[in-house]
Amino acid sequence: MQRATFEASGVTVRQRVEGVINWMRPVIQSDGGDIELVDVSDGGVVSVRFHGACVGCPSSEATLRLGIERNLREKVPEVTEVIPIEK
Image 1 (cartoon, helix red, strand yellow):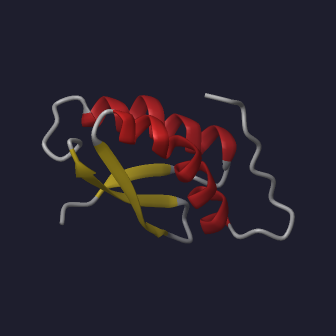
Image 2 (cartoon, helix red, strand yellow):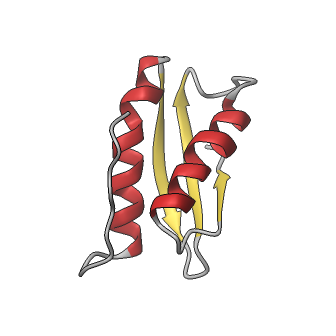
């Protein structure tokens, strides 16, 4: 993946989170899954919903923590946690 920056200038935290998710989306889709941003709380908790092959996949927790959460926290420092939401 190419390095991307998601600066704060005039952009909301939610928009920056969406930008990071969209940046990561092709990798997730290449494995037959997808991710949807559900919410970003005032406290920095990001709620996401998995779709496709990610639903019920035993590796989805590792993808969430090691890929999605790590990238979001690195690129959007306001993010404190990422949690999966069931349908």
